[in-house]
Image (cartoon, rainbow, N blue to C red; front, top):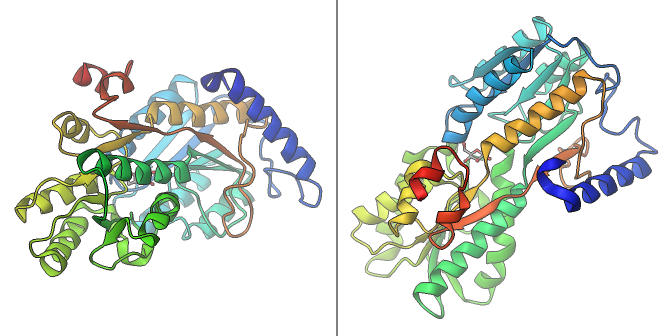
Length: 365
Ligand code: BGC
């Protein structure tokens, strides 16, 4: 893929070759009984894009990019948000199928609640691409395009350690752990990625989770809602900290990071190291001002661009390029994926990280 230069291309070709080798025993790699890419379809076909709730800026931007990109390429676009929740998203997907969508791109609210609608899509010959979030427990999903979610978590875990070390040379450090919404398949993957870095440090005593809430189930933030994270942080600070210092907080994204910082400030404590994700404008400003410690750059433009490349390729009858055929088992099948590399951003590289970004570029100059 152009975006990755030569090394990426080689990796992608290797992955495709590996997929071809492991395909025996499965019906057809990347396909589950429908025409995933084999035949192509009309150049002005309807393409459905089912987006979740507006829980972070990336989704809002994706809506515009999908609308512009699809119509610019000559397709008819049906791009929908489901702010009303899961049943609204189910209805939207059904309606896309009824209207004859040839590809349905899905950013699921609840990755395990779309089996019926996606089967309906497959039965009608539509190709299903999971976008950013995996859809689970169904074979009616053909491809997955996302940033490498486990890597996002690893980068967050490492940033938390680095940030605390830069303030205080050695531990033990008092920390708290936050995860995203449990219905979003990404939330556990982010958390697992972070814990692959943090757990050894918890086990050896470098990190102390003062609240004792170390499991994913205890750390989750329903609906990715800022107020839920803020409330949980308030409760933990009031119940477990007293006059003790809070050195760091693992936050899975920027919206929650800012809510956590608000809570800590209200409790009168010094600013801890708080991680994030999404490069939201307010958080990038906060990083520049020395408040939030880090975010992750997952350029939505690149992700939508890649999803659009997939759609255009499918239209022409080509199989989309994938570069990962092992990481995303959705409970029923391993979904062939194209993963983009996330980038950690702290105050140190914030000035160079967003070069060329029309919104963040000028802010960080
Ligand atoms: C996305 C994150 C986002 C979160 C909340 C996740 O699935 O990958 O970028 O912060 O949803 O909207």
